[in-house]
Image 1 (tube, rainbow, N blue to C red):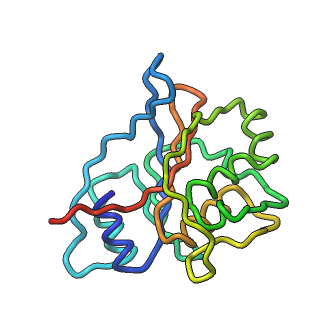
Image 2 (cartoon, helix red, strand yellow):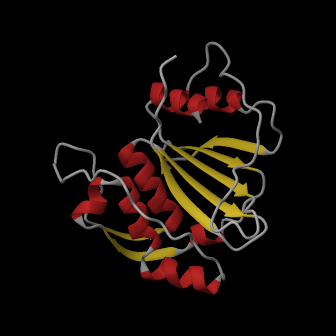
Length: 190
């Protein structure tokens, strides 16, 4: 993630990572990210080419740039049925407009996504939020109060693009658990 974050920052891009996870039986809602070998981006590359270079030794990873400029990494085969859920009307309250994790929660708790979760027999982990809340300020990045007629996937793209970060979607291969999280991109000093 550190390599990817640096590539995205330098190219002023946002990212999406979709991955199949392993969920240890009897271990609550823990998801294990797949082990993958990454390499530093090739010298002289940036943006999509640099992101693709990070994963160049992995045949089962697809790295592409969406039409809206988001660099999307898909690791292996991951069930994405829930992401295709259409949402007719998605309202963001002031807290979710200015805070990534609350925006994702608003998407996941929309009526349509809740119904699709039930219909697909999926479940999302119970989350306890312990984040500082950004107060509304028009000068800060924020989502519109209302968006209409989009899919869950498009709504997550909107979050990634607005807050210039990485939205991760994982689905367990051995259970019905899925999770959506936002990666803040902390890069430790080198």
